[in-house]
Amino acid sequence: MVVCSHPQPAASNELQDFLLARLGLSSNALNLGLRQAELEQAPLPIVLWSFGLLSLEQLQQVLDWENNQG
Image (tube, rainbow, N blue to C red; front, side):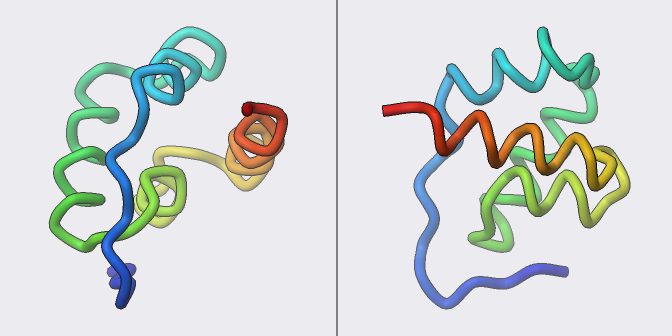
């Protein structure tokens, strides 16, 4: 379980699209991650990784993608 002391923003539609389209995450895995991230107030990519739904390499791809947004 990953619990943050500061509320985390909800995952953007763009992040969700990236996870589904570019990384091939299933919609069921994404929905599980979204629910758990809200429950734990933790970043979605970290929750997905902690559940084994993203590999370390995929987590790095997500973090790189997030850093290039904006």
